[in-house]
Amino acid sequence: MSAFNVAKFGGTSVADFTAMSRCAAIVKNNPYTKLVVSSACSGVTNLLVELANGVADPNERSSIIEKIRGIHVAVIDQLQQPSEVTEAIDEIIVSITQAAESASLQPNLKLTDHLVSCGELMSTHLLTQVFVEHGVESLRFDIRDVLKTNSLFGSAEPDLEQTREQAQKLLSPLCEQSVVITQGFIGSDSEGSTTTLGRGGSDYSAALIAEAINAAGLEIWTDVPGIYTTDPRIAPAAKPIPEISFSEASEAANFGAKILHPSTLLPALRHHIPVFVGSSKAPEQGGTWIRDRVASAPLFRALTLRGNQTMVTLKSINMYQAYGFLAEVFQILAKHKVSVDLITTSEVSVSLTLDQTNTAGGAPQLPIAAQAELEQLCSVKVEQNLSLVALIGNNMGQARGTAKQIFSTLEEYNLRMICYGASNHNLCFLMAESDARLAVQQLHQELFE
Ligand code: ADP
Ligand code: ASP
Ligand code: MG
Image (tube, rainbow, N blue to C red; front, side, top):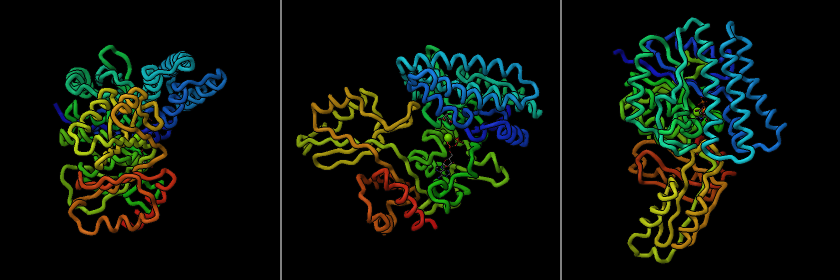
């Protein structure tokens, strides 16, 4: 069996008919691209999350649903053969209307996943028809038959073995026949209920599917021509990076470069699948290659910013020279399925930040029950409105003077937490949300411009 490429198109790449036509041209241009993973049309997931969080006013609900419908109808209006797609979209809109009403009474994570999955379910109907009308032999596939996950609604974890088995059985043979267009972001649990992989999860889906079908390459098509030295929306002088290693790119994704979902590179790394990131608006501009081995390993590679951080500080004098305090803390956190991101400790206290990619959005919360259990052990302080800034590079632990250069740029700021040393590839710190953009701009100017 030949090895194919998997191409993922993000929300802006499938925003409307013109954008979808560009995707068709990109796939037509490369006969090896046989599997297409699509996000929802730009803006649709945000609207669905709004509905899922519960909109009590029926008029407001209708107006959101009308907006969602309008985005899809605008594409349908440009199709030559719209009838089947119109029917499919109408059916999904009915299901959205019902689910939004239920969510307005009692929102919950399972219902949220059911609702937000409708974005990808709709976009793939449209995209398949656009491809067909552009002469690309294509068919639409429901990925919930392949991407199997646990039941952690909002940030479900894939079952790799089952996903591989299903992909080899159902997807690979189809890719031999035509281009297969499927949904990113969504999967299903053992009961058949729809799950999601967390916001921005289509990148991760594409990588998981690429791994499962032994793809030769993974293309991530977005609205910027590659990974930049920092988010170009924050620092307009940011420059694209032609080539970056898996380790550096994983750190960048993990610490908030929104361009890739944090887990995207794990499957690609496991199977040594080269990843390309480029702009579907300007494919001719090239992009970034993420590979096992790259030609250069600069001290500073990129800067990332992640908002919505929650920091928890636990203090107890019992911690001083005591065995097992941290083990107890982590046992409680694990029991309540709280995933920890960063951690620093002193003799009597430990500070940690909570992980966040959940589909429902917002700052991650320490569950009330977990807080109550921790309070039996120590004092607990929860702080929000914080951002995490990370500097990504190589051999940062070994280079002399690195810290001085960075911290002198940040003299004016109050840094709430610093993590340095665990990885040679990053140095990160937590600061007030209101300061973080400016800090990134200043650091970028000092280290990259
Ligand atoms: P998609 O819908 O295609 O998944 P996203 O909006 O999720 O696109 O990601 C692309 C955006 O990521 C860019 O428009 C850019 O603002 C942002 N971004 C953040 N960090 C970076 C970075 N280091 N390089 C490029 N883009 C970045
Ligand atoms: N549509 C989902 C989101 O907006 C997944 C994705 O685009 O990657 O988060
Ligand atoms: Mg994205």
